[in-house]
Image (cartoon, rainbow, N blue to C red; front, side):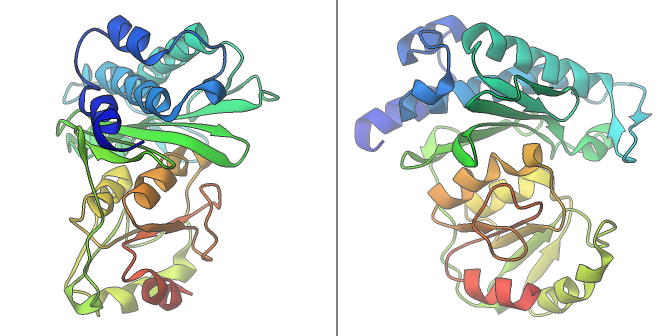
Length: 288
């Protein structure tokens, strides 16, 4: 998707009512997202991300209780309500599709097309009142991601992409940076202690010593910064499928390189290294 058609599809994503946007894009006329064209896929994932984000935003900076899941990660009513809202929208419009979400697991596991949901990526930031959290949505056929979107209600940013259709940030096409010297690069991660993979800390620290800037508070916002040219690399040593699925098209369609830690170009490799193109090879070599 390019030119006026692409600009219209991405640039008007926030215009009109939800029903009018869906009617214009063809959403609701198919029982599976796999049959949609790129423009409709972009609209669909962006709409679900906005819905989840709006549901979560109702609880942001409020006093809510925090539960701890079996894996030690936090969860709140905001996470659950946001995922519930997203699932209801998908069930109504794409009844044949499967859903995999962080909070409520799998529906229709044998479906050819599935939606992946992380209602609040960055729950620790959310609970702390830090606005760098996002609602992540992707739709995939097998291991092929058809489209991905992340809505950041706390900072009023949305980013959406589909293979061949470009990466769009608040309605405008976006690109990774062209920084080619590591000494001028901004490197990001979520938690530089790497608590789940401590054996990877030393490679990361050695890499950051060669960079201009290293920062945390990453989560999904770090990947947006790479896709929009404000940082050169974002890494996470451990990611679940709902964490990573939306990220691959965002980075690749912005002109960057997305892989797992071992360098495989997959959205489902259990980890993520996202970079601009110029520094892709050097950063991955340094992390191995």
